[in-house]
Image: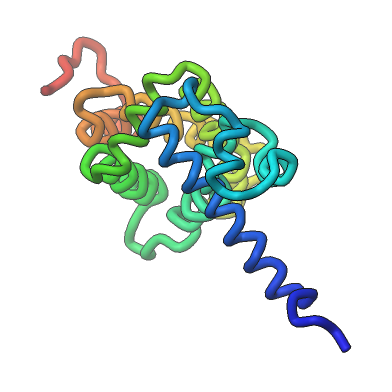
Length: 198
């Protein structure tokens, strides 16, 4: 007879719960003391697991901060693939990224998280590389929408610039307006001699 704990569904739920507990423990410590002041061993002790177990789930300390990578990529692709029929692709991306920017600056936890990321060089670099890794998935989603080859250059350019608009916004004191400015330029171009509006 098969043990309940050996059932795939139960095992996956336990793994997900352990992963979540590790990430939450790490974030509590990072927000309290700063990323550089916390060791992997301390995180493992707080989560009551071995350091080896922690490293099996998160191969780097930076990865503990960004546990939602897969979920973000899925939501980014869905913003394009599942948009209402009367919404253009650039407008769907603008709305999605504006919403993310609003959450990053308005929620107490989200704003503390972004401050931690942007003021810690190792995290800032890791986050930017991680965020831009979504470029391939977004390029493929755009190519499907427009009936183009997966590596279509226009789709790749739109994916890259849309993602870069968000990284620019997170570093701006006016994050949400920056998204709109970036997408206005993406959609309508820049006229010679045009003065940017505040």
